Length: 133
Length: 127
Image 1 (cartoon, chains in turn blue, green):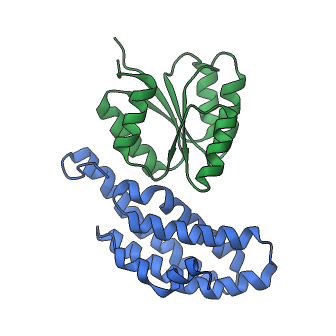
Image 2 (cartoon, rainbow over the protein chains, first blue to last red):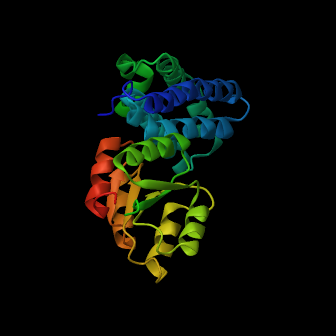
């Protein structure tokens, strides 16, 4: 991205506001993770919403890794919900989601500190989403 | 001369702020509609008020497709250029948008500088 984030106080404030919102998104994920066992569909929808919004915004603010992780999780959950495989599949996904949501949560914490953690993309829980495992 | 006005239909506040900032710096006046219903209302109220509509796809009340259909069927705003912000399934969205008469597409997340370049291409200088 070609914006000079620190060169304009107004732009810096806009970015700071986005960075601050990353902690809120992390909190939504934390709550969703705690609800996965009791309400897999609802919790997975909440996770997907966070992922989808990150996919569409984060890179515009200089966080391409967050966008990529968001896309991967959003695509994965799209596939799960559109396949109509029923509650068994959703409950299986809930177990799997613990892994990739933890990666996203950690990346959000890095983002809240102003860092885009490219290493997060190497996490096995994410790699398995693209390898078809 | 007055500033050219751009209607931005976008429900994601963080994207809206960035677009308002960047296009504002370029000299355009940006008016925000936080959902598709508000966008349609603004276009009904001021059919000749805007030089460009920047339109997100996924929005509450009325989505981008509904707004685009309104624009292309309502004679008072039919000629308004529309820049669609697409996200998931970009290729599918592009095909839909082309069929419904969008003027230009930009995939989210986008570089705000690229957005400003496209806006200038579509509507010319800010004044």
